[in-house]
Image (cartoon, rainbow, N blue to C red; front, top):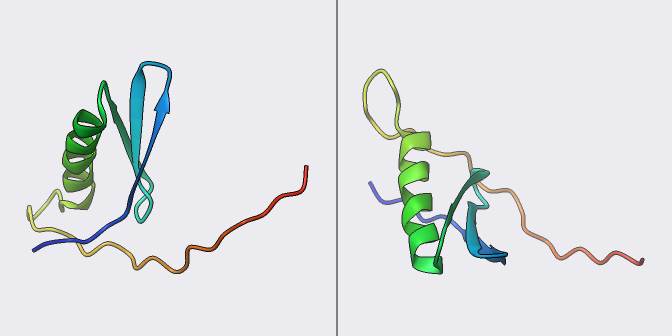
Length: 71
């Protein structure tokens, strides 16, 4: 089963942080590629059912909308 999810990546000091926007799962790495590899592993662990080992279907993403904040 292939899951198509959205990853958001940003840099914090020497680390790259990768978050799966659909599931709220986050990981990090010293490069973007490492952060994405680590995120993929974290997502697989998150969606794997502990009892059966099968992949659980993640919840559907509802909406992504722009947000403008006046400061």
